[in-house]
Length: 124
Length: 124
DNA sequence: TTAACTGTACTATTTGTAATAGTACGGTTA
DNA sequence: TAACCGTACTATTACAAATAGTACAGTTAA
Image (tube, rainbow over all chains, first blue to last red; front, side, top):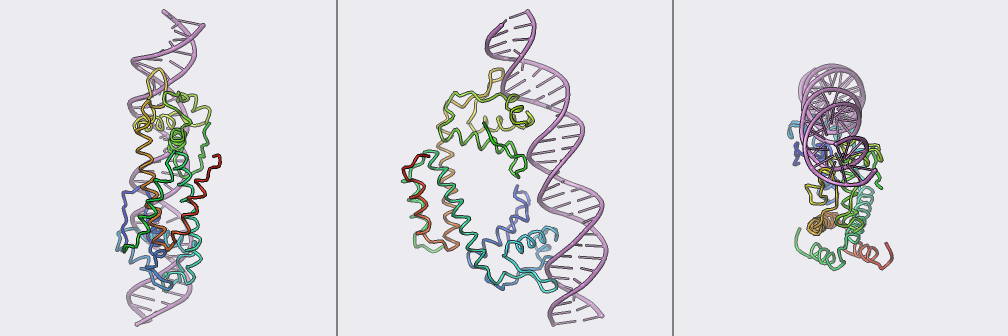
């Protein structure tokens, strides 16, 4: 279900957060969808339960998950707020990258084709 | 000359690398330009000389600096190779960001205005 | 020549964070 | 009641960043 690289410089709990957020943003995980329990995911990924819990705890704080003691962890019902905020943040980061590229002397004409290519109507 | 945040999660030597690379890419630091010595920059930034050296060493490996024992550290004479490779890498990262945005349901029409804004003819 | 600089190399130590290990508590479900 | 759930807590290990100190060889200018 998830790909974790324990050798990566990116902490395991952050890898987990990123992957769950991506599944939420792309619409694969819908509101109310149950996630694997801390313990089951721990054994499935061969990762300490505390590491899983740290990721889940952070996802609760970010409004992605809604964990209930005794029941489990579920995708937050009003996930749209998170999606809006995340997309806005990504657009700001994109703008920063564009500014860097312009400052490095990269012309507009080298960038526009990328957008056309990404937004072709092929299947994803 | 440089802004270092010792509280940041990004290592100090990486902050230094990023800032020097940015000055090179934007054309502020030209080939042959001498950089502060390891020791002087160490005292100026209140950072251990070993940390500065680690950054300089990495910049030598990347083809940004050319350090000469006894003389000092200078911007590499053929810096264009580095600039080309760096810009190409940035464009690849931009493409990855664009793919993420599309996958998150962000429309092309929200991105194009950003490019227009960034590439206006105002002074930087 | 000498003094003061330069980059470089090396070991030891401290510090912070990620990750692990183990235990425990209370709520939920079949 | 038994088996699961999230949560909390302490202790420990592991690793990388950063610091501290020393040393060596090359360069430069007085």
